[in-house]
Length: 306
Image 1 (cartoon, rainbow, N blue to C red):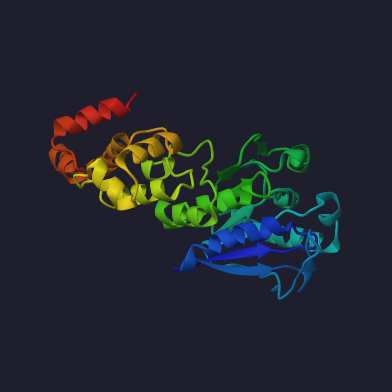
Image 2 (image 1 turned 60 degrees about the horizontal axis):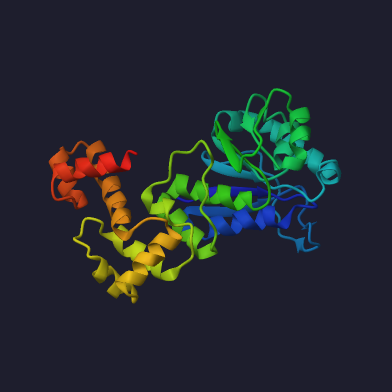
């Protein structure tokens, strides 16, 4: 089922705060359905480009929707307008939906200031652009404002640090709603680094070593990720990605900081751990993941525990 995403568009909106997350979510295909809403049917953006076709502000949303508040180029000016005041009052009326998490909220950059003025940040862990952290604290004295964070979530309210962090957060939301592979595919399509927040669990091996753009290494990783249980030989992998085995080994060390065999072992470990969580016995999990025996799986777990 498609998730409705509603972008609030105000005069002076930072174009990348809006288009960055919108393009990111759009690349996830039919998983998200985008809407653009606001008090005015057309506005001028931070770069002078005009947006039109903006829908009126709805009074309610389907459960599970995502409301996005982008930042503006001059929050002192553009959050002190009749349009911003109309949105503030409207957000205040939406508090019950947001606080019950029927409606999730995503604030990009200074968008968190507008949410704070509407009373949505009281007692919430949040962040914003470093230039307006003090103003966020003043607007929401009981908020738990965090510094040096790319993004943070608290009870269905997401806030991000500024501009490109909206893309980071959107990738994270694709991962949350659709899974790691669609998020990784979008990140690769956009040629951006799929980052996670500091409080998130460590990246799985399918994502942890993907922060590069070398096509041969990506092709090799795709092969191994598709069938980690197979009896892969380094020469076979190298042949399939059209490089020598020695060059492939160098590329893995250069771009991943790990050998081909160690990378494959980490994939197999992830598969085995998932099988164990599903209730399989050690021997079943080991064989299904590509290990020759439970002992080999145990040794791999010991090696990767350090």
